[in-house]
Image 1 (cartoon, one colour):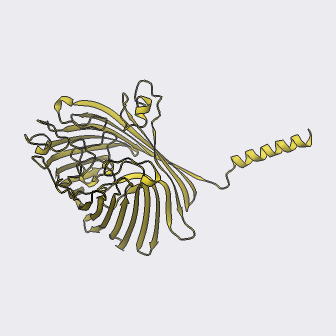
Image 2 (cartoon, helix red, strand yellow; image 1 turned 135 degrees about the horizontal axis):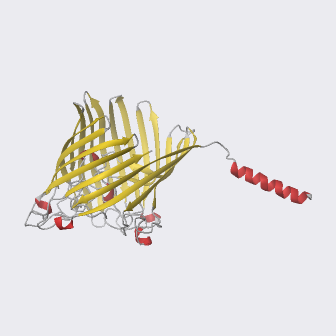
Length: 441
C-alpha cells in the first residue's frame, strides 16, 4: 500500500472518529405525554367549532401526544425540544391539525401516512457565566402574569432573568409574525408584533411573593398599534388557603391614524382552601369590555391573540375553555377568546376537588356574562355545572369520565332580541360527556 493511500485511509478513520465521539458527554432526557378523549356532545364539533343545537349531537375521538427531548451538556447548559402530534379518529381537514389542509387530512384516516408533527419549543437554556443570569433563546413557552387572560403560548423569544437575593428580575423580548389585534397580517421584519416585558418578583417570605410588571406591545406599521400594560400580582399561602391575584391596566393606541385610545383593565383572583379530604376552589375574573359606541376609544381588554387566552382556575368546559382539552377546545359561541370580541367578561366560579388512594374527583359550578353586551338583548353567557371522576390504572396512566351541562344565557340563544356573537336563535343548552386516557412519562 503506498503512502498516499495509507494517509487517505488514516484521515478517513480520523474523521469518523471525530464524528462518532462528541467533544463532551451529553445527558439525554426524554419526557412526554399521551391524551385521548372520546366525546358525546351537542356542543363541540371536534374541529374547533361550537354548536348550540341538539340536532348537532355527535360523537368523536381525538388524541394528542407530546414528546420532549432535552440534551444536557451540563447543569448550566441544555437544549430543549418539544413536539406535538394531534389526530382526530377518522381524520380531519381542519387546520387545527398539523398540515391537515396540505395533506388532505391528518393521520387519523384509513391510511395514516401524513405529516402531523408540530413544533412547540426549540430553545437553548443556559446560565450566563459573565452575568450570572439565566437565559432562554429560541421558541419558548410563555405564560403571562395575569393567569392566562392576556396570553399563554409558545413563541420565538429571548428571556433573561437574574436573582438579587429575594428579588428576581426578568426581561422578555418576543417577535410574533401572526395576525395582530386589528386583524392585519404581516410577514416582514417591519411588520412583526414586538413584545417587550419587564417583570419583577419579590419573595417577602416562603409563603408570600409580590410582583410588578410592564408590558409593551408594538404592532405593524400598517396600524401603528401600541399597547402598554402595568400590572401587579401576588401569590401566597395564608393558613389553609393558597391565593393568587393579578391586576392590569392597559393604555396606548389601537390605531394612531384613527386615534383610537386604549383604556382597559382586568383582574383575577383564585383561591384553593383545604377543606376535609380535599380543597375548595374559588375564583373571580373581570376583563373590561368596549361598548362599541365611542369611535376614538377602546375600553376592551387587549389580548395577545384570540386563541391564546385561558382562565384555568375556573375549571369550566363550556362557558370558558378547559386547559386539558385538545383541538376541540373552545367555549359557548365558538369563542376561544375570553373577551368575546372585545366585549369583556365577568365570571364567578366555585368547586371542590379531592383524591382517595387511586381515585380522584372534582365538581364545579360557574357563571359568566360579558361586560358590554353592545346591541345584544342580554349580557348572559350562561351557568355551567360539571364533574370529573378519575382512576389511576398505573402510576403513569389514568382514566377519567367528565360530564358538563350549561344553562344557556339569553345572550346566546334564549332571547328573541339581538344575540351575542356566535348566538343561535332558539338554541338548546349545550352539554358534553367524555372519557379520557392520560399517560405521562
